[in-house]
Length: 188
Image (cartoon, rainbow, N blue to C red; front, side, top):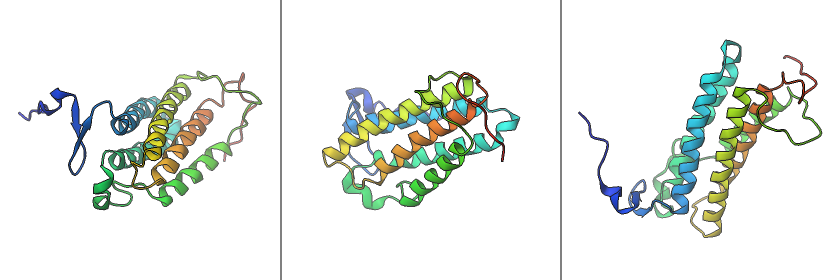
């Protein structure tokens, strides 16, 4: 049997990748912890996708994978950033560009109402909005890390900002059938 507990965190600290420890309430752990929550929330959204939403489910899975890359970067102290790999444990401008492509693709399929959208058009869209809010929380923590000079690159901020936009776009795409919110969409 593999034991998953080490008892090292019993003092209220946690390990960073490639060494170092920080308090469990540190902004860095808050940032990657919020992304971890978002990945779990996106997992629920993916499980809610029906057979007709296979492409959406695949894009949600891709976003989950990419959020783990951002989480790995955030779980690494800046002095160890040289050990990270682009696209594996460090976000890249190409990843940001890919999110922008997906956002544009989803938003081309919806007509936004001229008001704020209240989450809850259906269970899938509501779950995507829950994930979006966790990503936004991570973004606030990442912004604080950047302000404190604790990031090795600001690309992760750009990436997480687009990730929350993508979750929003996916949520709007998922609830296009709610007549209270949308006039309809064309299929491509």
